[in-house]
Image (cartoon, rainbow, N blue to C red):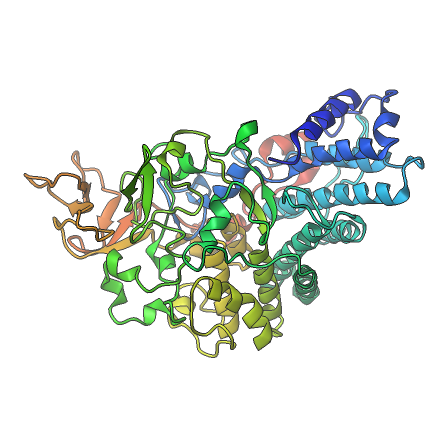
Amino acid sequence: MKPHSYYRFAAVVILLILSGCKKLDQSPEDTATRPVVFGSTKGLELYATSFYDVLPTAGQIHRQDEIADYSVRSQVPDFLSKGAYGPRQSDGWDWTKLRNINFFIENNTDPAVPSSDRNHYNGLARFFRAWFYFDKVRRFGDVPWINKTFTIDDPTLFNKRDSRTLVMDSVLADLKYACDNIKTTSDNSRSLITKNVAWAFRSRVALFEGTFRKYHHQYKLESTAAEWLQEAARSADQVIKSNAFTLNTAGGTDASYRQLFISEAPVASEVILSNVMNASLNVLNDANWYWTSATYGARVSFSRTFVNTYLNIDGTPFTSRAGYQTMTFMEEVKGRDKRLKQTIRLGNYKRINGGKEEAAPPVFSYTYTGYQPIKWTLDDTYYDGGTRNTNSICIIRYAEILLNYAEAKAELGALSADDWSRTIGALRRRAGITGNTEALPVSIDSYLQSTYFPEISDPVLLEVRRERGIELAFEGFRFYDLVRWHKGELFALPWNGFYVPALNEPLDLNEDGQPDVCFYQQMPASPVKGVTYVNVAPTLSGGTANPQRLTNRTSGELTWLNNVERRWYYEGETTPEKRYLYPIPESERLLNTNLGQNPGW
């Protein structure tokens, strides 16, 4: 729920009175009601609630990692398929919400309202303008910088796009103004923009831009990267030093992490900003439906390649275990970072069905790999059949701020042992990890380096990146993390699942004495009751290739859709940088031929 429904309704009424326009080139009516809105603090407050529509919805957050290196899903995304995505399919070039913000800033000038109040609400408006533009720059790169309300005959409607540097400098200026002028310092509901929210988002923006400039050499902005990284560290440190937030530890190492994602009320100790659900107002989300249904969502599961990056509980790499490649699911999930058991189904995980608790191992009517997520799902199956979820969806939380600080400092070569302990170490201790949480790492995990980041030789930065991937998994960060690190090739990593030692041998995935799944190439004459049978024959009836196979035909890792081409860059495309930006939609370029197009599209 974005904030207080009554105020949001009142704001909508006011906006409808002031202006029904939806396009950049439409002008609001100059009515007698305008002084009612801009002539009082209450009017400004009501108007400002309309800005919250800029924030992502609950569904956008919990499913945003549909396209990620670790996300194995029902179909290859069009974006990664040759010739399947282009300017005709592109979207996101919508400026309606910006117009609403700029209209407010232009009209919030009435001296009858105390200047500190006007500045506060202008700070909110500029925060949301920064959020709006950050989304646009991440997606499209250069975009038009618009800081006024257009009229229908404004010739600047047909200008070229402005440079990335101009737009991002303007975004940072808006965030600086917001941090200086927003007066709200606390909000127990975690649904409103406060000074700490502005600082937290400022750290996110600066980290993205600093690393993007550092690793995307074609822009020739490497010399400005350090300034943005310093800004990221300063902004994150501002939140840390406010002492307003801590990592949630209620429930202990076995439950405190997942509690952040399944609680109806945001966990206020750690959550900084949330999309808050409210069952009594029917403000609900569809997380269970999406993450459990065989037909509704994309059936996203982890890949084994990524699961291998979860550390042992003693802080050593899992891939340092002898024979890890051929460990069964039941073996490999034991003795690991406790975030793993709070992110996927494993061990004695149970669900409630009709009021009765039942064992709930991975279900192969959903998962293709065996690593079935539970991070956003409630344990009662009641929630599986529609938009019924009552759990609030966090937008910003303190763990991200710790990670932003650690990464910025590591990129600058300035992360101290104390910094490590209070950021990465603190996150790992919350996850039950007992070793290597106090001192900076000095040795390189060869699996992590060779699989993901062969160009990185700093063990500290490698471990920071590991931690970010694990802590923020399925929270909507991974796509743009890989983009800013210039690691698009990771989207083509194999879609693999757990190790299957042999055909026709049922596996008891949760070791409760009841076999759960069996892999076959020829269906057994006498199937075991209660077991799901999965066909891994190379070809299906009719001669079509089977998308679900084993790497060694009769044993090995599960694979899914690895017979279908999926790449970040295809031979014959004009530039390997193509997919780091989305194309400008063709329909918009027909309206304004000066927009140009992003490279390769």
